[in-house]
Image (cartoon, rainbow, N blue to C red; front, side, top):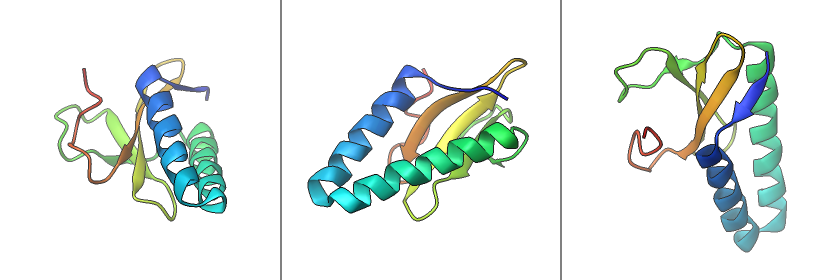
Length: 98
C-alpha cells in the first residue's frame, strides 16, 4: 500500500535527522535508514501497529523506529497510509493532531 508522509511528518524527520547529524553523522545515517525500514514495513503490512494510548481514534496507530526513541504515527485510509508524524517518545502526545 502507498505510504505518504504529511508535512509535519516530513518536518519531524528533517529536524530529527539534523539534530542527530550535529551529534554524529553515522548515527544520523542510521536514524534515516531505520525510519526508511519502518516505512517499508508499513508499506508491506499496513494493518500493523499498536494503538496510540493518548488518542481516542483507534484508527491512529504507531510503529516504533528500531534503536531510536521515535515512533511512526499513521492512519490507514482506503487508498493509502498517511504518516501523521515521526514522533519522539518524549514529545507531548498528540502534538501532530491538528
